[in-house]
Image (cartoon, rainbow, N blue to C red; front, side, top):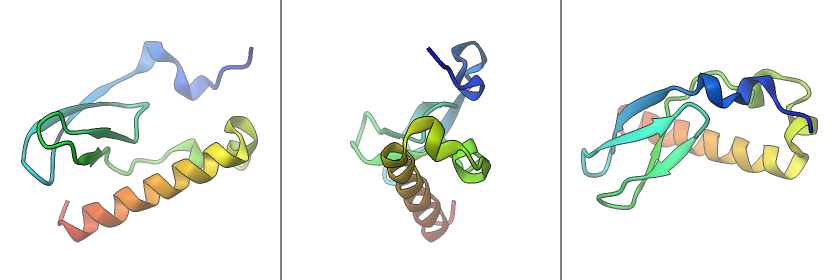
Length: 87
């Protein structure tokens, strides 16, 4: 089975992000784009750091066109919300 080298669990990092809705500190791993705040249930997005989804010409082939479209949509939404709320 093929595994993306950028998604190796041995190299996961955790970040603490503040929920923009309630201020609760939420753990988000480097392989996640968003998580739900356990306190208020709103979505908390990881900072928009470069992802292979953004720059790799083979990303849609690697993860499948449908999944690629879904992730691009979520990543674009997270960027817009963070800019709107001053993140």
